[in-house]
View (tube, one colour):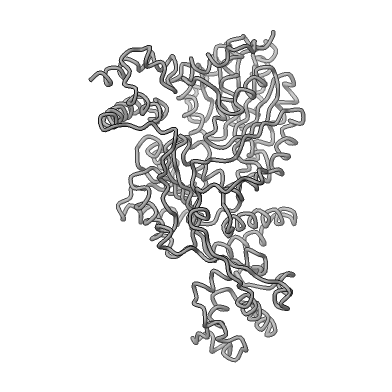
Length: 619
């Protein structure tokens, strides 16, 4: 049996099913390659249209008699929303996971074995079971196994930010079904992670498609912690009042406390972490996906599969462990292409804690070294005085990108100053303490430099140190910023005793001898920075401008969409994205033909919702 013909039929299929008149970027090249039996590794940023890269081939190949596409997906919520969206588009899709009853699973298996099903979503744990593999064997022998799509492929890599051991068994796909093409997709993978994916999934012969990692609609802003809760509140109220957003915290306790505090401040917030009851997690995620203006406060357990397109900000109250993790998490904002903000507050304690975790990790030396490299890259992004986007893209192999003009370092450039003398003072204090066989954390050393007298300082006789009081020309906040940057530049290290004590590094000696200058970053004045971030609400060329009647119609359409989605048990964006509703409100179509020209409105949705939409536009 031959593959689908690759004439101009794919664009009409794209329009018929999904309502889009053209592919974006490398989508068409990828789709044609996979339709022609080619293996592929696709790196495409969140919101860049990865799903279409396997969904269109799945439909085209099924129509050509090639049978079922199996999609490996890591999360139940992701499967549910993807299948719901496909069914709304008129595509026969299903999932197999633990949320189904025995009878429901049996029905889907019968549909799968019949050859009528276009796409089946399954977790890697299920796919590698003997029963499921036996069913795939039967389909393969009958020529009805069309394609494997491995979503969130970075999960297969030990260096990826979301490693899942169950993904390691997916090499069985190549070994057992050698003639079935495979497409692996991820939004984030540096060179090492990419090589690991290729090796573990045996994709050495696959074509690699790397789209730009740039998300120009996302504005990056990183601020030094100074009462982080108050900074977060000011950021949300100044720039994102009433918007949907995600706030990431490192601990479960901090998640719950932050959510409660935001609610007390009049900001509607929910908590999400792995320690909550499964029913509570499901309810909170459903509310976030279906309701407007909810802020989800979460650990990174709330991550993959969050397809909500209108998340207007992603905030971090703790330092991410890697640039890959940071990029993946911030990428959950602005999936609809409209402006969004990635906001991060971090301070000295974050750096100390992350250094301590990296140095005391249970892994081998190579693993600890990799954790240290990940942290170095993250700190370099935080401390840069150049364009953050330029540095972010360089990390993912896109060097030489011009300054974006849409990050905090571009709009409010920080100053730099020669901090060699303060650095020498701090390092000298570490030396004086070491001579007494003593090691302390940053707070105690800063007290010594400031000349602070308290019971602990006096009991240890630290007032007699020659460095006592020599740093009184700076305040404690300034000293914390200096220490943070010395750690970032690896001129200081966190000890392995588990107490966050500080010690010198091999590079410290050159500073103490005056052979190396130390340049430090100073935050831009707050008056120039508007709550530490600047405005994120920049006009976007693709936004559809609406007059007052148009805005009123848009709100009517949103209300109808909300009621329709609630009745169907689906997120509102699965019915229609805001961009589609705004275009409808702008065009005010009066006939089905006019409505069919709206982007994002395929044949199935036109048939299902066309009359209801036209009734609203005609009112």
